[in-house]
Structure formats: structure tokens, C-alpha cells
Image 1 (cartoon, rainbow, N blue to C red):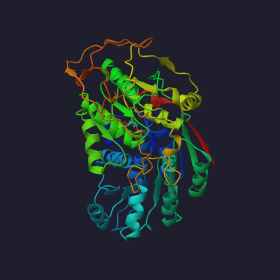
Image 2: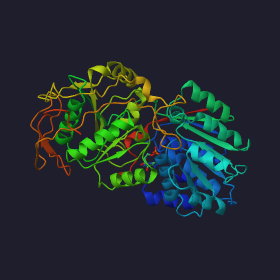
Image 3: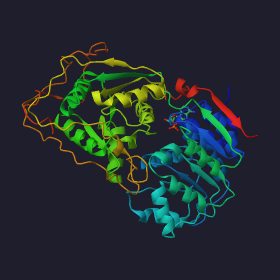
Image 4: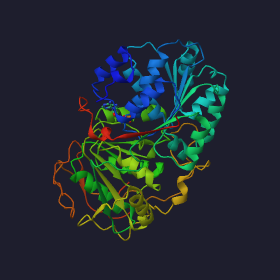
Length: 490
Ligand code: AMP
């Protein structure tokens, strides 16, 4: 069995790895690290969750440890599509680089530039950036890119989705042609393949697990709802949240506006819930995520900004309040649970409008997911004003550059919401109760009459009027043991 020491990493890095508790390299690490150390270009077809971050961070530390940074002339650049991913990579550098004296700057939108500029002035070895902020700082003359020796493009397909490819190309054009480029993407659609061809010279290709597969550790359930009614959808979600033994969960909505709405509604119903989407300012996003990681908030309603790569240990549940408009997002969303060999559950609410998107998800994952019906799901008040939480607005998920919403708030914001008339809450009679096993069993499902925990829900009546609103690390986990295939151009 290959060890980290076999990969050619130095003692300082091996010590840091040992401190974290990893004993065995993951397949992507085993395959990628030696090539990166040989200064080869690399095309890594790997999803988050495979250990790919350490796959490039560890050898970068090794190589950068041998030189010194000069003011305003960083020696390496890592591009990430979202601020959260950029921050996560920065954390990885801190963890694995604890015995190194390398300096790092995190250039992300939504935070003040002053400190970023001060860091750049002092000289940094590693620049971790989202494309928008990176270009802003370059255009203000705050960074020189002539000394970049290693360029990492991470989550390239996500960059494409978010409309960042022109920015990425622009940045690539500013870098010295003689450099090492590492390019990672979970999927390889033709646009990404073309981009990789443009950036990479004679690369080695490392592929870990075919894209668009869902982990065996995740129990997937589709809840079929009888109507497209918004209130009923939220009611179904509340029933699930109360019944399931939710330790912590992400709830995904397709739209930022709906994130805000659902967040408000769940708060009102007494759930311990936060919200995360690309229009929030960065300090708020960071604070919310930190609270979630510390378990101070147990439920996070989020847009797809959280679907990729966010690494929260032991997440018990994912709920798709909306069926994603793009099938690959389903895989990324539910992949927030069932990580590191643990088990998890992913519920998706299906309304009659979702048929097409549901078919696309099942075609992509090559699986038919069990359907369940919530028995005795209260009927909405026929007199209540109802604006459906329509999945029919399929064209609205793209931004002006053809990318999806949730640019991570890096530069632009999503401005494409159609005005929707969400009903305002009617006063409801609510009785505060201790969390209790739920009354209405789910058919077929494991009607886990388990105690809902710190979440102390209110029990409410159906609306009278306008709606409710309002690692074991010592052993390599199984999911990381998937074989990696290596294709090399030579
Ligand atoms: P990533 O794909 O880089 O987001 O990593 C996914 C998770 O795997 C992170 O929580 C890492 O800390 C963890 N991880 C990375 N490398 C290893 C390893 N060699 N052994 C065990 N866990 C690892």
C-alpha cells in the first residue's frame, strides 16, 4: 500500500499530515502528487470529497517551500468559483503548511480590499482567489502575475456554470506561458475540455470515480406531493424535519429569494435555522457557515452556492426543497451528506411540475429513487392566496453570461427573479411543544419516529388564510478508496 512518504513529500509535510490523522493517500492524491512534484501539467477529473484539495495543496507546499515570495509577485495562483471554496482551500494550506513559513492571500469578493492589498504588498507565495476579485485587484495594479509558477483552476465546471470562464481565460492570458497548470473539474463537458486543452501542455490525466454518481452511503428518497402549493410544500418539509433525526441539514432551494422566504418561514416555526446564498455579504456568509459548523445552527437553507465542496463533517441530511434545474446539481447537493464513509439521507420534494427535472436526475444517476408519500399531509386552504413555488421558471436560473445564479456574490448578483407574490402569513395558533415523535407516518419510508432534537418545533394548524409565512481519520474511508485511473500523454 502506498504511503504519503512514498509520494516524495518532505518531513514537514508528512508531520502535518500525521497531525491531521491521515494515514493513507486517497487515489487522487496517490496519482496526482507525484506528477505535480515532477512539475507536470495535470487534468484532474475529480469531485470534491475525493481528497483532491490535498492532492494539489501538498505538492504545492513542497515546491513553494523551496523559494521566497517577492512583494506583489505571488508565486502561485489558485482560482476557486466561490468564496467558501476559496476559504476552504486557504484552511487546507494552513493545516498542511503549519510547519512551513509560506504566506498566503485570500482574494475574495464581499470583503474589504485593504487587508488583501497589504498582504500582497508584503509578498505572498500563494494567492487563492475568486475570479472577479482577482481581476479587480489586477486592474488596480495591485498584483503582478509575472512570477506565477503554478496555476490551479479548481472546480472548472462550476466556473462554467457560474459564467466565470471569460474571467478565467483572461487571467490565464495574464500569466507567464512557462508555468505549471493544474486543472480540476468534476465533469468534462466539451467547453471544459476545450478550456483544458487551451491551458494545459502535455498533461497527465487523473480520473477518480465517474462523474455524476451518488454515494452508496446516502439514502435517497423522493417525496411526492399532490400539488404545487407552496404552503403544502413547506408543511411537508416541516413534517420531515420534525420526524427525522436531523443532526444537521442543508435545505436547498433553486432561488436566492426562496432561500430567504423559506428561512423566514422555518424561523417562524421555531427551527434553529440559518440561510446562505450568494447575495448575502461575505461576513454574514462566513459567520453563518461558522455557526453551522459549530452546530449552533443545525439547519441551513441555501442556494447552490453551498452545493459544491463545502466540507461539513457528519451532515445527517440534505433536503431538496426544490428539484434542481440542472441534474448535476442534484449530485453535488446530496453529496454534502454521506461524506467520509458516513451515512446520510437526502430527501427531495417533488411536485407535479417537476417531472421533467426529476427524469433528468434519474437519467443522470442511472437510478430510480424510491417515492414516498406523506400520509395525512394537510390540504392547503383553498381560499388562501397561493403563489406556487413554481419549478416552471426554468429559464430564470441563468445569469446574463449564460451562467447559473449564485455567482458566489463575487462580483455580480442575480437580478433575474421574476416578481412573485408570496403570500403573507396569517396569524396562526401555535402551540409550543417539546420535540416529539411525529404523528403522521410516512408510507414505505422508515417512519423513524425519532426524537427531533435541538430543533424545538411549533405544532401548527393548517393555514386559515394566506399561507404560513410567512475522519474516523485513522483509516481511509471507503468512499476515498475508489480506484483512480491515470491516462498520460506520455
Ligand atoms: P476534498 O475532496 O479535498 O474536499 O476532501 C474531502 C475530505 O477528505 C476532507 O474532509 C479532507 O479532510 C478529507 N481527506 C483528504 N485527504 C484524506 C486522506 N488521505 N485520508 C482521509 N481523509 C482525507
